[in-house]
Length: 239
Image 1 (cartoon, one colour):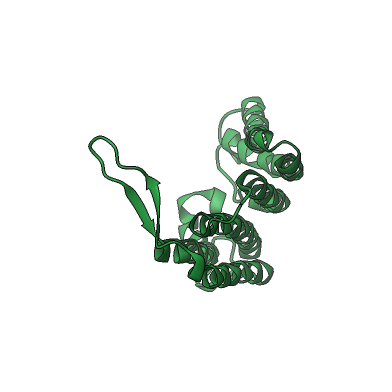
Image 2 (tube, one colour):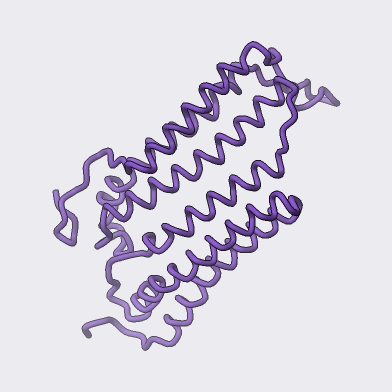
């Protein structure tokens, strides 16, 4: 089967080499960390004390030892299906058409890699709850989220919608997102660097910087695309 652009259908599984390697390394690190921590882990951790009408909420160490490695593996598998799924859903909207499967594969591969780094750090923090070791949650997770934002900023320009809409305004809205995504990518990447710095210098501000930067970046895309649509004459292209 070929797409509307004439490109052959991508394989069912489209693994992005660098992204898959980083994800696999992160999952392996989580598994090794669980194995090393296992002898020192408490049998369970109470996440909510009993009170009122509810009893205590406890999480066995076996669940915490495997949950996040399994989550990272599942996400990687789902992302590897992304190009194939997009190809078969392309008829639903022009925005999913005329997009290179390789670009989609790179976006999803690097996203999987960035998320796996965050999950690795969170996994180490969860293990520390069972072993009693000190873990600086704000600094570690803040820095990991910053790395994720740098990665997302780098691939964001590749995620711009493709295809072509028959409505002039809809097409203007879509076309404006290409350069807007490039600018937003720079904003998100810079936000990631700032988040890493804040994670160590001012941990309480890291969340504000990360959320604010991402909202500004995607707000930039929305505003530029909306202005392009408003300025474009109505009707249909080719009419």
